[in-house]
Length: 316
Ligand code: NDP
Ligand code: OXD
Image (cartoon, rainbow, N blue to C red; front, side):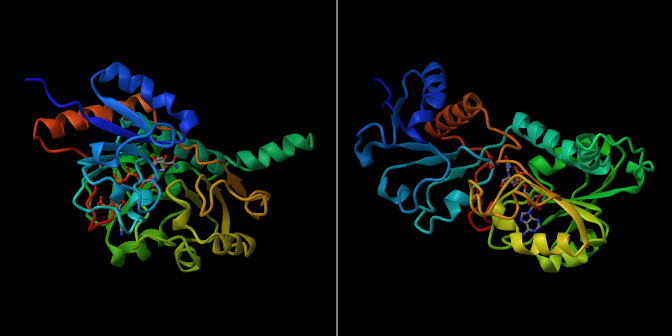
């Protein structure tokens, strides 16, 4: 008896589909892969979905799907779909290489700020030789990470190697060497009060939307610097600009935005104290994503539990 051939729907932009179809064909030649927008298919024939931000309401039109694999670590794009079929497990993308890239980005931007590199860039443009007083020591600089999960933990460990005073904020208490743990809403204020540099690595959920607001910024020490690498929905952009322009915050680095691509009319582009990058802190590797889906399908087909399944009640 031969096993039934499984069908995976790839929900990605059609012109990029080859990035995933090639490794999927290598790793699972028996898997039938159809590409949304390119191939015609019977909705009832789809067993699995690999995608990022499917159109709201689309997944519920696939009556037989057994699991959905997210192309991203953040699954807010799925959970915003009020019609997501909640009986279907959603697997988020967890990959050490992705965490390493996120850590590189965060370490780089923390050090650019800490070593005043933007000021030296501007002096170079003006051909000015100015030796400023040495920056504060890393040992005297407190970095706080909002969301100390898969990625936040590695970011904290990498920054700890530079001797920053590290702390993380999460829902549950953590035991990470050299990283002070603050847990729960009641500990947000003391966590913020000790964060000279604040990095947001939270998932976007109803509890964390707009957590980076005037109220939060007021709790940070004067001169604090903000890095948002999580989701644009965490930040009230106008509150950030106001807090920087008032002199309370010293600046920010932003990789993610409420509207992406960031519109040309946004004041963030040209703000002298804000660094903008186009959601590139880490780029997930399609080959690894394909493997996550292939391994997950194998687990499902052999009746074993999936890994990294999203808890719909928590929202991440
Ligand atoms: P995890 O789920 O592993 O970690 C999330 C952390 O946030 C956990 O520590 C969790 O606490 C904490 N948290 C969640 N909700 C709350 C809350 N209400 N109060 C306090 N703490 C909370 O996520 P990852 O580290 O894998 O990813 C984090 C985010 O990074 C993703 O959701 C995505 O949006 C973003 N990202 C951005 C990328 C980019 O290129 N810019 C690339 C990859 C990811 P606890 O541990 O107690 O559960
Ligand atoms: C992700 C992302 O969530 O790329 O992985 O933002």
